[in-house]
Length: 264
Ligand SMILES: Nc1ncnc2c1ncn2[C@@H]1O[C@H](COP(=O)(O)OP(=O)(O)OP(=O)(O)O)[C@@H](O)[C@H]1O
Ligand SMILES: Cc1ncc(COP(=O)(O)O)c(N)n1
Image (cartoon, rainbow, N blue to C red; front, side, top):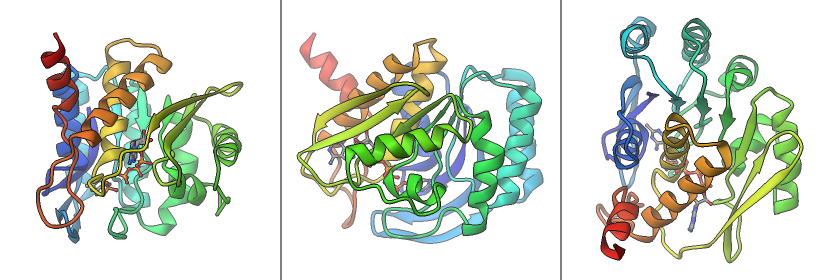
Protein backbone atom coordinates (compact mmCIF):
# COMPACT_ATOMS: atom_id res chain seq x y z
CA UNK A 1 0.00 0.00 0.00
CA UNK A 2 1.14 3.53 -0.71
CA UNK A 3 -0.06 6.56 1.28
CA UNK A 4 1.15 9.52 -0.77
CA UNK A 5 0.35 12.41 -3.08
CA UNK A 6 -0.84 12.17 -6.67
CA UNK A 7 1.55 13.48 -9.37
CA UNK A 8 -0.51 14.28 -12.47
CA UNK A 9 2.72 14.05 -14.51
CA UNK A 10 3.00 10.36 -13.64
CA UNK A 11 6.70 10.28 -12.69
CA UNK A 12 6.54 10.55 -8.89
CA UNK A 13 4.00 10.10 -6.08
CA UNK A 14 1.22 7.51 -6.13
CA UNK A 15 1.66 6.96 -9.86
CA UNK A 16 5.36 6.04 -9.53
CA UNK A 17 4.61 3.86 -6.51
CA UNK A 18 1.91 1.79 -8.21
CA UNK A 19 4.00 1.34 -11.39
CA UNK A 20 6.90 0.14 -9.26
CA UNK A 21 4.74 -2.28 -7.27
CA UNK A 22 3.32 -3.74 -10.48
CA UNK A 23 6.78 -4.14 -12.04
CA UNK A 24 8.06 -5.96 -8.97
CA UNK A 25 5.14 -8.37 -8.77
CA UNK A 26 3.19 -7.07 -5.78
CA UNK A 27 -0.44 -5.90 -5.76
CA UNK A 28 -0.65 -2.15 -5.12
CA UNK A 29 -3.31 -0.26 -3.16
CA UNK A 30 -3.36 3.45 -2.28
CA UNK A 31 -4.61 6.26 -0.08
CA UNK A 32 -4.15 9.69 -1.66
CA UNK A 33 -3.15 12.49 0.75
CA UNK A 34 -2.98 15.39 -1.70
CA UNK A 35 -3.51 16.03 -5.38
CA UNK A 36 -0.74 17.92 -7.16
CA UNK A 37 -0.91 19.52 -10.57
CA UNK A 38 2.55 18.69 -11.78
CA UNK A 39 4.57 18.18 -14.94
CA UNK A 40 8.25 18.01 -15.90
CA UNK A 41 8.56 21.80 -15.38
CA UNK A 42 7.45 21.77 -11.74
CA UNK A 43 4.50 21.77 -9.36
CA UNK A 44 1.76 24.17 -10.47
CA UNK A 45 -0.66 23.53 -7.55
CA UNK A 46 -1.11 21.44 -4.39
CA UNK A 47 -4.54 20.44 -3.05
CA UNK A 48 -4.30 18.59 0.28
CA UNK A 49 -7.33 16.34 0.83
CA UNK A 50 -9.55 16.60 3.93
CA UNK A 51 -8.47 14.39 6.84
CA UNK A 52 -11.65 12.30 6.75
CA UNK A 53 -11.11 11.58 3.03
CA UNK A 54 -7.62 10.26 3.78
CA UNK A 55 -8.75 8.31 6.86
CA UNK A 56 -11.60 6.68 4.93
CA UNK A 57 -9.27 5.39 2.18
CA UNK A 58 -6.83 3.93 4.72
CA UNK A 59 -9.67 2.25 6.65
CA UNK A 60 -11.16 0.76 3.48
CA UNK A 61 -7.86 -0.80 2.43
CA UNK A 62 -6.43 -1.92 5.76
CA UNK A 63 -9.68 -3.18 7.35
CA UNK A 64 -10.24 -5.63 4.50
CA UNK A 65 -7.30 -6.16 2.15
CA UNK A 66 -4.46 -5.48 4.61
CA UNK A 67 -0.91 -4.77 3.48
CA UNK A 68 2.33 -6.76 3.61
CA UNK A 69 4.10 -3.40 3.49
CA UNK A 70 3.03 0.24 3.66
CA UNK A 71 5.03 3.03 2.03
CA UNK A 72 4.38 6.67 2.95
CA UNK A 73 5.35 9.55 0.65
CA UNK A 74 4.08 13.15 0.45
CA UNK A 75 2.10 13.84 3.66
CA UNK A 76 2.08 17.65 3.43
CA UNK A 77 0.96 18.70 6.94
CA UNK A 78 1.43 17.84 10.62
CA UNK A 79 -2.27 16.92 10.82
CA UNK A 80 -1.97 14.40 7.97
CA UNK A 81 1.18 12.93 9.56
CA UNK A 82 -0.62 12.50 12.90
CA UNK A 83 -3.59 10.87 11.18
CA UNK A 84 -1.40 8.44 9.23
CA UNK A 85 0.60 7.58 12.37
CA UNK A 86 -2.67 6.89 14.28
CA UNK A 87 -3.88 4.57 11.51
CA UNK A 88 -0.53 2.74 11.37
CA UNK A 89 -0.67 2.21 15.15
CA UNK A 90 -4.28 0.96 14.81
CA UNK A 91 -3.68 -1.56 12.02
CA UNK A 92 -0.04 -2.35 12.88
CA UNK A 93 1.46 -3.30 9.50
CA UNK A 94 4.87 -4.93 10.05
CA UNK A 95 6.80 -3.22 7.28
CA UNK A 96 6.44 0.55 7.10
CA UNK A 97 8.71 2.41 4.69
CA UNK A 98 8.72 6.16 5.41
CA UNK A 99 9.95 8.33 2.54
CA UNK A 100 10.12 11.77 4.19
CA UNK A 101 9.20 13.74 1.05
CA UNK A 102 9.74 17.47 1.63
CA UNK A 103 10.61 19.41 -1.52
CA UNK A 104 10.03 18.60 -5.20
CA UNK A 105 12.97 18.81 -7.63
CA UNK A 106 11.77 22.23 -8.81
CA UNK A 107 11.73 23.60 -5.21
CA UNK A 108 7.99 23.37 -4.39
CA UNK A 109 7.20 22.50 -0.76
CA UNK A 110 5.51 19.10 -0.44
CA UNK A 111 5.72 19.21 3.38
CA UNK A 112 5.02 22.26 5.52
CA UNK A 113 8.02 23.32 7.66
CA UNK A 114 6.19 22.94 10.96
CA UNK A 115 5.36 19.31 10.06
CA UNK A 116 8.98 18.15 10.39
CA UNK A 117 8.60 17.82 14.17
CA UNK A 118 5.52 15.58 13.72
CA UNK A 119 7.46 13.47 11.23
CA UNK A 120 10.29 13.07 13.74
CA UNK A 121 8.11 12.24 16.75
CA UNK A 122 5.13 10.38 15.28
CA UNK A 123 6.25 8.60 12.15
CA UNK A 124 9.94 7.73 12.43
CA UNK A 125 9.44 5.49 15.49
CA UNK A 126 6.92 3.43 13.45
CA UNK A 127 9.24 2.96 10.47
CA UNK A 128 10.97 -0.26 9.49
CA UNK A 129 12.99 1.93 7.12
CA UNK A 130 13.24 5.68 6.61
CA UNK A 131 14.56 6.74 3.20
CA UNK A 132 15.66 10.42 3.23
CA UNK A 133 17.75 12.06 0.55
CA UNK A 134 20.58 14.33 1.72
CA UNK A 135 18.56 17.58 2.09
CA UNK A 136 15.76 15.71 3.90
CA UNK A 137 18.21 14.05 6.31
CA UNK A 138 19.75 17.43 6.99
CA UNK A 139 16.33 19.03 7.67
CA UNK A 140 15.29 16.24 10.06
CA UNK A 141 18.61 16.68 11.89
CA UNK A 142 18.15 20.46 12.33
CA UNK A 143 20.46 21.49 9.50
CA UNK A 144 23.28 18.93 9.90
CA UNK A 145 25.92 19.41 7.20
CA UNK A 146 26.17 16.36 4.90
CA UNK A 147 28.83 16.69 2.18
CA UNK A 148 30.55 13.29 2.04
CA UNK A 149 29.89 9.59 2.52
CA UNK A 150 31.41 9.86 6.02
CA UNK A 151 28.93 12.66 6.80
CA UNK A 152 26.13 10.43 5.46
CA UNK A 153 27.13 7.59 7.80
CA UNK A 154 27.19 9.99 10.76
CA UNK A 155 23.76 11.37 9.77
CA UNK A 156 22.35 7.84 9.40
CA UNK A 157 23.55 7.09 12.93
CA UNK A 158 21.73 10.19 14.27
CA UNK A 159 18.56 9.39 12.31
CA UNK A 160 18.57 5.86 13.71
CA UNK A 161 18.31 7.31 17.23
CA UNK A 162 14.89 8.75 16.25
CA UNK A 163 13.43 5.25 16.17
CA UNK A 164 13.37 3.57 12.74
CA UNK A 165 14.71 -0.01 12.53
CA UNK A 166 16.86 0.90 9.50
CA UNK A 167 17.99 4.11 7.84
CA UNK A 168 18.54 4.18 4.07
CA UNK A 169 20.17 7.53 3.28
CA UNK A 170 20.31 8.25 -0.47
CA UNK A 171 23.25 10.10 -1.95
CA UNK A 172 21.79 11.14 -5.31
CA UNK A 173 22.17 14.81 -4.38
CA UNK A 174 25.92 14.63 -3.59
CA UNK A 175 28.54 15.27 -6.30
CA UNK A 176 30.85 12.53 -7.52
CA UNK A 177 31.38 9.80 -10.10
CA UNK A 178 29.25 7.38 -8.09
CA UNK A 179 25.73 7.49 -6.60
CA UNK A 180 26.37 6.16 -3.09
CA UNK A 181 23.63 5.23 -0.61
CA UNK A 182 24.04 4.18 3.04
CA UNK A 183 22.04 1.47 4.84
CA UNK A 184 22.44 1.66 8.63
CA UNK A 185 21.00 -0.96 11.00
CA UNK A 186 22.00 0.59 14.32
CA UNK A 187 25.43 -1.03 14.33
CA UNK A 188 26.92 -1.22 10.86
CA UNK A 189 26.72 0.92 7.76
CA UNK A 190 26.60 -0.81 4.39
CA UNK A 191 27.27 1.18 1.22
CA UNK A 192 25.47 0.68 -2.10
CA UNK A 193 27.38 2.21 -5.03
CA UNK A 194 26.63 2.58 -8.73
CA UNK A 195 28.25 4.75 -11.40
CA UNK A 196 26.45 8.12 -11.58
CA UNK A 197 24.36 8.34 -14.76
CA UNK A 198 24.69 11.67 -16.58
CA UNK A 199 21.08 12.71 -17.06
CA UNK A 200 18.77 15.46 -15.82
CA UNK A 201 15.75 13.17 -16.01
CA UNK A 202 15.46 12.05 -12.40
CA UNK A 203 11.93 13.11 -11.49
CA UNK A 204 10.51 10.60 -9.02
CA UNK A 205 13.71 8.69 -8.20
CA UNK A 206 13.05 8.95 -4.46
CA UNK A 207 9.45 7.70 -4.64
CA UNK A 208 10.45 4.88 -6.95
CA UNK A 209 13.33 3.72 -4.74
CA UNK A 210 11.22 3.70 -1.55
CA UNK A 211 8.41 1.80 -3.32
CA UNK A 212 10.85 -0.79 -4.64
CA UNK A 213 12.16 -1.33 -1.09
CA UNK A 214 8.54 -1.71 0.14
CA UNK A 215 7.82 -4.23 -2.65
CA UNK A 216 10.88 -6.28 -1.68
CA UNK A 217 9.91 -6.24 2.01
CA UNK A 218 6.31 -7.19 1.10
CA UNK A 219 7.71 -10.25 -0.69
CA UNK A 220 9.61 -11.22 2.46
CA UNK A 221 13.12 -10.21 1.40
CA UNK A 222 15.55 -9.22 4.17
CA UNK A 223 16.30 -5.49 4.21
CA UNK A 224 19.71 -5.68 2.49
CA UNK A 225 18.22 -7.70 -0.39
CA UNK A 226 15.22 -5.36 -0.67
CA UNK A 227 17.61 -2.40 -0.86
CA UNK A 228 19.87 -4.13 -3.41
CA UNK A 229 16.80 -4.87 -5.56
CA UNK A 230 15.64 -1.24 -5.28
CA UNK A 231 19.09 0.01 -6.30
CA UNK A 232 19.06 -2.25 -9.40
CA UNK A 233 15.51 -1.10 -10.18
CA UNK A 234 16.20 2.65 -9.90
CA UNK A 235 19.56 2.43 -11.70
CA UNK A 236 17.90 0.74 -14.69
CA UNK A 237 15.00 3.22 -14.55
CA UNK A 238 17.32 6.27 -14.52
CA UNK A 239 19.48 4.72 -17.27
CA UNK A 240 16.43 4.54 -19.56
CA UNK A 241 14.84 7.79 -18.35
CA UNK A 242 12.11 9.13 -20.61
CA UNK A 243 12.66 12.43 -22.39
CA UNK A 244 9.06 13.55 -22.22
CA UNK A 245 8.01 17.11 -21.46
CA UNK A 246 10.51 19.95 -21.68
CA UNK A 247 11.86 19.89 -18.12
CA UNK A 248 13.03 17.14 -15.74
CA UNK A 249 11.56 13.95 -17.18
CA UNK A 250 10.51 10.80 -15.32
CA UNK A 251 12.42 7.53 -15.04
CA UNK A 252 11.38 4.41 -16.94
CA UNK A 253 9.69 2.07 -14.48
CA UNK A 254 9.70 -0.92 -16.87
CA UNK A 255 13.44 -0.70 -17.60
CA UNK A 256 14.71 -3.49 -15.30
CA UNK A 257 12.06 -5.94 -16.56
CA UNK A 258 12.80 -5.08 -20.21
CA UNK A 259 16.55 -5.55 -19.62
CA UNK A 260 15.96 -8.92 -17.95
CA UNK A 261 13.64 -10.03 -20.78
CA UNK A 262 16.15 -9.11 -23.48
CA UNK A 263 19.01 -10.92 -21.71
CA UNK A 264 17.06 -14.18 -21.20
N1 LIG B 1 22.34 10.38 -11.64
C1 LIG B 1 22.18 9.24 -10.96
N2 LIG B 1 22.77 8.09 -11.38
C2 LIG B 1 22.60 6.93 -10.72
N3 LIG B 1 21.87 6.81 -9.60
C3 LIG B 1 21.26 7.91 -9.12
C4 LIG B 1 21.37 9.18 -9.77
N4 LIG B 1 20.62 10.11 -9.08
C5 LIG B 1 20.07 9.43 -8.05
N5 LIG B 1 20.46 8.13 -8.05
C6 LIG B 1 20.03 7.08 -7.13
O1 LIG B 1 18.60 7.12 -7.10
C7 LIG B 1 18.11 6.84 -5.80
C8 LIG B 1 17.28 8.02 -5.32
O2 LIG B 1 18.20 8.97 -4.83
P1 LIG B 1 17.99 10.52 -4.69
O3 LIG B 1 19.02 11.00 -3.74
O4 LIG B 1 17.91 11.13 -6.04
O5 LIG B 1 16.57 10.51 -4.02
P2 LIG B 1 15.56 11.68 -3.91
O6 LIG B 1 16.29 12.97 -3.93
O7 LIG B 1 14.68 11.35 -2.76
O8 LIG B 1 14.73 11.62 -5.18
P3 LIG B 1 13.72 12.78 -5.53
O9 LIG B 1 14.60 13.94 -5.88
O10 LIG B 1 12.98 12.18 -6.65
O11 LIG B 1 12.90 13.07 -4.30
C9 LIG B 1 19.36 6.55 -4.96
O12 LIG B 1 19.61 5.15 -4.97
C10 LIG B 1 20.45 7.31 -5.69
O13 LIG B 1 21.73 6.81 -5.42
C1 LIG C 1 3.20 13.86 -5.31
C2 LIG C 1 4.68 13.89 -5.24
N1 LIG C 1 5.33 13.15 -4.32
C3 LIG C 1 6.70 13.17 -4.27
C4 LIG C 1 7.43 13.95 -5.14
C5 LIG C 1 8.95 13.99 -5.05
O1 LIG C 1 9.55 13.63 -6.24
P1 LIG C 1 10.68 14.55 -6.97
O2 LIG C 1 11.56 15.12 -5.89
O3 LIG C 1 11.39 13.63 -7.88
O4 LIG C 1 9.98 15.65 -7.72
C6 LIG C 1 6.72 14.71 -6.08
N2 LIG C 1 7.35 15.50 -6.96
N3 LIG C 1 5.36 14.66 -6.12
